[in-house]
Length: 200
Image (cartoon, rainbow, N blue to C red; front, side, top):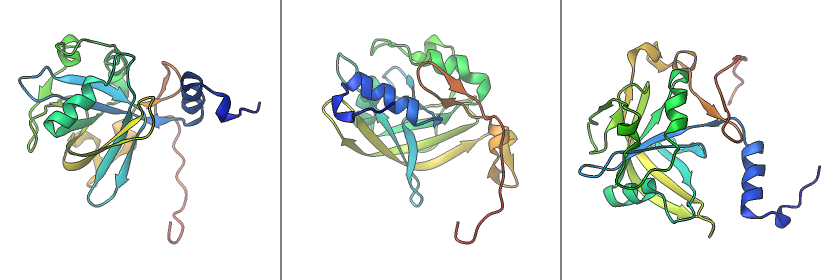
């Protein structure tokens, strides 16, 4: 199969991207400082963009009705939390992608526990094994179809002790969820460890 990218509309382009760039880690983002409802949504166009200071970025696409609650909250409040879900949280993670009105909270609907953060006013998910408190840095708009890349600086980590081995987050204990194309997800699977190379 050969596909000329210039012939694709936005929906077809999206399908090609999510089928090609796999598996993708998921940022399960809480946003909205009180008195706003606490918003929760998963984003799988997610990565870290700077080592020091630690900075994370994820893409937020527009809905047909405009910008999503997540990006409005982040830009208004200047903070958000990236929670990393373990495989036992898959059903809740998927359910949190359902559209709710701006006055509704996915966290409340799903009856998820939250805890206060240390440096920011946005709560984190108590049961997420890793939560990163982030201070908003910038939004980079790439296209008129709504691909906005949001970047934040990590100011604190909250990590469950049971996923830590010798001071490091242990991926095999973390058991993170990855996103595939469509409403499909994958878990960690087989891990292959190779000998480190000089300079690698």
